[in-house]
Image (cartoon, rainbow, N blue to C red):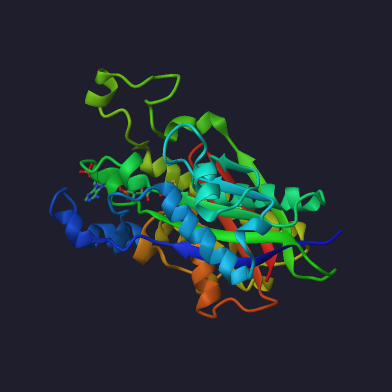
Length: 328
Ligand code: ACO
């Protein structure tokens, strides 16, 4: 069976930069605290007048250009996001319209693991033989949809952005492409990272707005511990299931949530930190966008070369987590 190849990557980040020093002006925090605890120096925030689907379409256009393909060639668009333009319809249909595509388009919600889930679904679609070109976009505008800018426990961590890949069956039988994907979830931990209101369990009301129930609530230490354990396990699963050892991996393109999480993962897996591609200092945690943004930057700056073995791994709210191994 032919492998699913990544034919092009793209990204879109807002122009507006908000530094740690900027945050100091309106929330009780400091640049040294944020830098030491997370590795984040600045993040991008989406300008007024633009939406999630604008950012997603920009990243999608860049990935299509890199792949040398028109939007009309797409057989499906998967938009991985928990911050769509609106609850209905799917963000993906706006992206389809903005790209000028006519294919099926749907959203996938797996929080920070969204891109790994989306890549896995796209791989499955391609392996059926019915889909030749699938655009997978990870995009979040957390700044506008979920962040409580008065809560220093969470607001310093996140940023907005989008990353995209175009995938499809390899034209020939070769080593390159997605070797395997591995998905996991544990709903017993759903309370660790959540937005309580705005859904069926707690519909929007004046009281939920007044109580700030529409913003993200997080048990930081609990998330940290699960992220380290499960990203490490999922990473080793992807490596071992393919008969490799950690030293065979060329680059780790992991979810950029926190530098300390990645350092702990490196220690647990014996994957050296030098193999982790890092851009968290520039963008913060962009949730489902972080892996495709990092991948696009690593490809465009020449870090990732043909034949490299790439390990992708992420954990997010749910908890949902997963990994993918790709021969570039
Ligand atoms: N600035 C200054 N002080 C702060 C800030 C801030 N932004 N935030 C919290 N503090 C304070 C706390 O109030 C606390 O003060 P206290 O001791 O007087 O009560 C003190 O700093 C220590 O707080 P801790 O919560 O113990 O700090 P910790 O070392 O656990 O770091 C952090 C907090 C950075 C949130 C960490 O737990 C973490 O990274 N967790 C993972 C969360 C994450 O990545 N979430 C993203 C979504 S899920 C994912 O992507 C994997």
